[in-house]
Length: 449
Image (cartoon, rainbow, N blue to C red):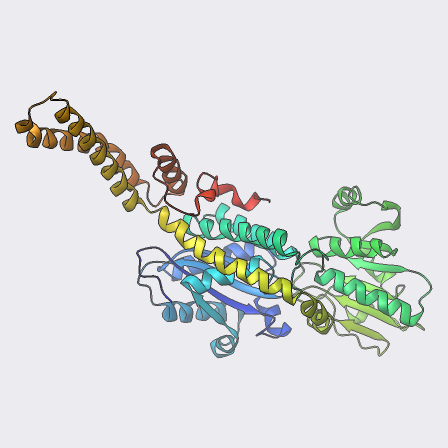
């Protein structure tokens, strides 16, 4: 259903693990800020009806969130974005069209809230997605690709995600792609009767760090191959058993790649890190987990190397989804309610209704005092009409500058805070979503609950 208001039109395009193969998601993936900025700038240059825009690119999804100018044809906007994507990623529009999911207005808001709350994740309830959305929003905001509209949306999405976590217990088990991979590795370790609980981890980003923590929790030792020794030193300080973790520069990969039975790889490299040219035959079987998108490991030529990708872990996740069905139902109720509250809230922040309420408050106050004066015979009854005109002109003069200032600031980022403050001062807040009224919305990428 489309809201019949002059509010901004929210719009999302989504390509996810549910509709698109890993091979295609690899082509869409954006793994550097420079590439992301260039892509967002291309959208800004070629899509004049897009007011604000951000991109969420993870191993399981590539999504575009936007606010559109009123009366924009959403199908035309979808086609324009698919054309940009096809040209940018060297893919066909028809292939993209088969996989894309478009949402507008309430359904777009509901989708963003669901993604942020981890209800649309491969591993339902994993908390990594919220951090990824905060980073995506923060980048777009700081690079001036998004402002008030998406800030409102993402602020409420983070609030919704926190509420889902706190009220449903959907994230209590702390399940993520990394934990599922380590759980499968432990199962392999027991079945294969591997002697040494050791693993090689390539990368030191967020995903790799989660893998390391899960490995240590299962009493594994880990050797990390990375490029930043200082980053490793900072990370080790967070660990309870730092002595079980070692570090080598990734340039030494050839020296270690054939020594370990368990390997986890999760870097932001757009190219293969582990190549067949590095491999030697071993007497033991090897089990490798490629948790990156695009993938970091070239398909091995040796039959005794078993490679798991992100999509290969999906069957292992299904049990997690089934176990959390009751929590998911409750979570979707929260998301549905949050979507309704969001629209109530942004409608309460509109400038024109506030100006009307201020004028009505002034009129009622003036009329009330005039009637008191008449009742006490401070002024003759025959002067009532003239005094009403004088009072009307007086409060119009008094409200003239505030009205101009409010209209002037209507499209600025600060308007939400300004409106909230005025409503609070004059007791004009009629919204059921008043809890969000006075928050500094423009720091919401750092918001925690």
